[in-house]
Amino acid sequence: MASVGVVLDLLSKAAVFAFCDDPWCIIPQFLTIRPIRNYGGVWGIGKGCSLLFLVVSVVALAAILIFRRRYRPRTSLAEFAFGLLIAGALGNVWDRLVSYPEGYVRDFIDVQLHLPRLEHWPTFNLADAFICVGVFLLLIHGVAREEKSAEDGKPS
Image 1 (cartoon, helix red, strand yellow):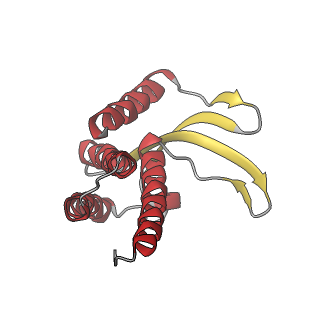
Image 2 (cartoon, one colour):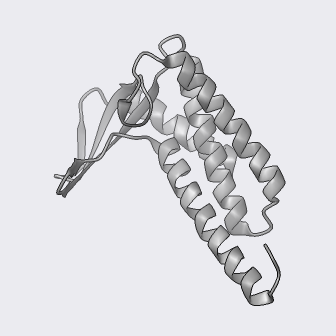
């Protein structure tokens, strides 16, 4: 899964940045393809700290790989979740490495939510989405695993 995710992320970034100079509205007032370079972290925080973000990204990828090895996922859900996490981390590490010393990631998915205090979600990419979905799936898997252990009377 991880290799497919990395390819999807990098191809989508390459296509958007090659062919989409101006914002492209997909769903009016909701979804726009808007290529931007994010020189910071989440929500653009920490602009100018490219080396720090590169190091943090590599450490996070290593931590995911170590956790996966120790966790030993035995379900397809856990395997899929780890694949998404690894793909997302690799996609963003790749961007930061290739763009170094500027150290940006290429974001392009721009969502407007029209909610109080959350009018505009920060622009993101497929790697970011893979990471968020992977974490969510691992949380679901962990809760299900805890419930099963409790039912079986075994500590997890």
